[in-house]
Amino acid sequence: MNTVTLRELSREDIPAVQLFLVSHLNAFFRAGRATPAADEDVFRLRQQFIQRPENLLLCAWNGERELVATLAACRYDDRITELRGRYTPATTAEICRCYVDREYRRQGIGRRMLAAAGEFCQRQGYTMLYLHTHHFLPGGYRFWLDNDFQVVMEMHDDWQLVHMEKSLPAK
Image (tube, rainbow, N blue to C red; front, side, top):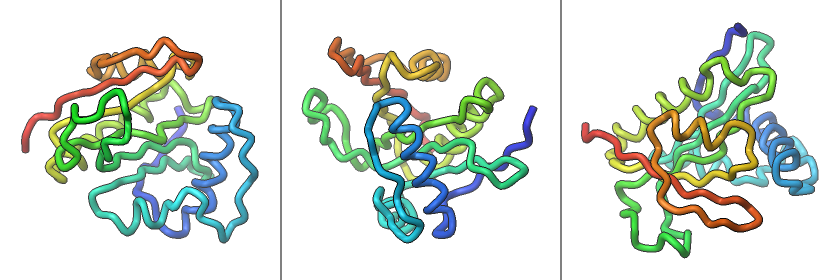
């Protein structure tokens, strides 16, 4: 098993995180995104995660200081049309940007990141976790079910989109 360290996103991490996210978006979603320059912040990571204390982006680094996984928790913004009004943004966090490098899957990294994000969400006063996933993502749907997320709605569309949620105990 590879040694992996978890920590919150820092300003210095932004170039590596962007490359990691772009490579996974291109691989899984055929997004065709160009590689961002080191000084670009195409995902607004600084604004979204460093400047907003209610949001978190966790990074997992191996012993060679290579990024091997990410997982984010953000205040839900009620943007999903099919779910509009179901969640209270002040008490709902959206889990997103969860990617684990192929070589590091099935080692408990995702579970560790989710547990850390859950603790963060409880400290922030979130009582509900929302996420959406796709059946075609390797291991994603099963991972969320195994971590007590419940299916809210399956879209049965080309994207094989599944909306899921999990209640958090109040702190």
